[in-house]
Image (cartoon, rainbow, N blue to C red; front, side, top):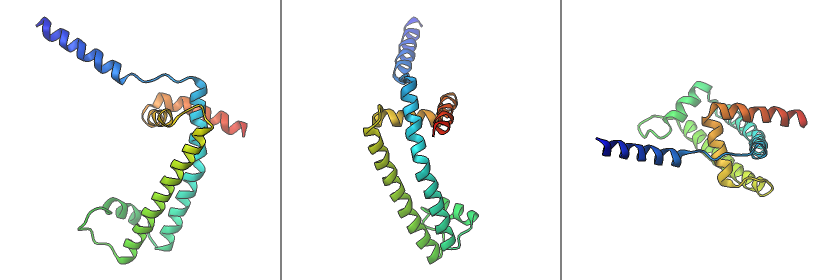
Length: 146
């Protein structure tokens, strides 16, 4: 019985030490917030381009959701126009992803953060509400200063 308890404690300790989050200084959190906000204009322009694409192909918001959800389903019937819409949408999304990645990599050259730190902080921002709240306070300060 004691052996199982020791094994369980060792496992818990190993799990805890491997999942511990790196602590970042406030200046690193602020640098992340600045980088994240710099992406917002790209995200907004992408959303606008997607809306224009929907208008071009006369795709409603509901139909858009259905098409995107069913895009990979081989048996889902789509019109030629909808197929062309999806081709252009995939192309737009890939171009945006590439541009965003390049823009972040360029900005990281001037930042105190590296690619790994940025992605770690991004993951925490998306998954840790307390951390996200702290970062949002930096957003407010950055927006006030500009």
